[in-house]
Image (cartoon, rainbow, N blue to C red; front, top):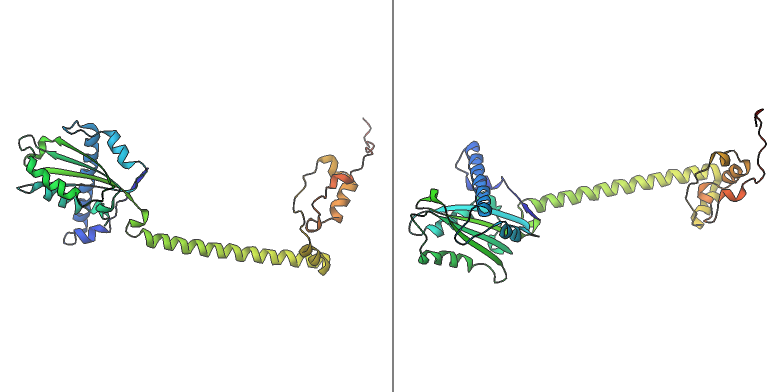
Length: 267
């Protein structure tokens, strides 16, 4: 129902100061963390619980999806976690605020629970979305976080053309398809020319004129063994070449109704 695109081109922008191997390792870590977070949404019971039905609702008919996760620590930890999630290479340069559906999960350590005042940061973030967006949110305890909070985002409803590089690829494919179409048309025209040359060679210009003036029936006939042995059927086919057959032509109309005498000694 939804397509999740991982675009390695983003690594050059985000991790430009890292070596290639380290940048790919960072992307792998980000992807693993995000995938783990989505799995936890389905399997871990939260205080504001999310489950498979919520994930399914967000992904159903979702088009292109983006998934990200971020960590934050300190006085403004929710904002920091949101910024970290939005800085992810998994977002593919998509403007998350143009999503049609979004699922947000907040995770925090039991020893450092979220305060109501901190929820203002989430409210401010959600106020940037359009009023028509479908929002599902949840909150769960994750002891391993200690003082940190984790924000997991799953947003859907993006067009395939919003994926970086996809527009150029579609244009290239369109050009390739157009070129292939022209090649096929040229081949068909060349074959048609050869067919006409053959018709003119064996039936003269009158054959070509007859072909152009009539809508002939270009349908093959499958003959039985008996019909292949019928001289009148074969003669009808020879006198009416394919390109000159009228729509009501049927070689069986010329069948010899008199059965042939057997030439064997045992019949």
